[in-house]
Image: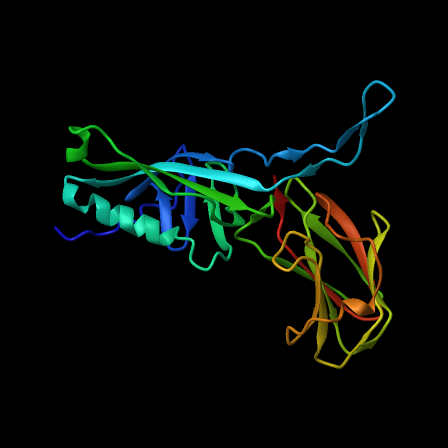
Length: 276
């Protein structure tokens, strides 16, 4: 019989739900078993340096490493045994390396208010566990999908937040996640620099010393783990504006609430809440 993909529901099973490149792994054709690296926190990069002439070590700033993921589950076609490898082919196509670029992987656990997302790609062979001869006659095959996310943080997949602070004004920004989250600061023209966005709660700021015409803007992207790293671009996407950056000490929005202010122009702050 002809293979027919069943996406299943959007209610996470007890193992959790994953969506990637048009495929849902949950309770349909592709069923979830364990989401290693998504329910775990990322690894911690130790920064200890042994003291050469004394006991112990010097503790520098520890950081999270890349998020390594292993999605395990099984493809299930029930009595349609001859369709099971059509399902496996669909899975392999969805998680194929392609051009190697990162894609959005969405995941959710029961009880979460929102879905979360990481930018990830395949990081090894997608493996299909071969059952014994009797089990081969059933429409089911277990799989494991290794993936990697260079940015270890998981972001709110359902809410891209945006707050515009008027020139000379202030606003409260709320990050409902568990860790500080990077953001985009959009300095809205017309303006003649310097213009500034300041986190008054932490005494941190971004200063831009260039100019912009009415209707134009400059975007400062603060995430070093994003493709291209931290960037400064204009409204047409042109790069090369990093040279106009002044003092820059604000890189993240902390968890909870913080008060921010703008001077010289209005500033739109764009972010997603973040978790480890």
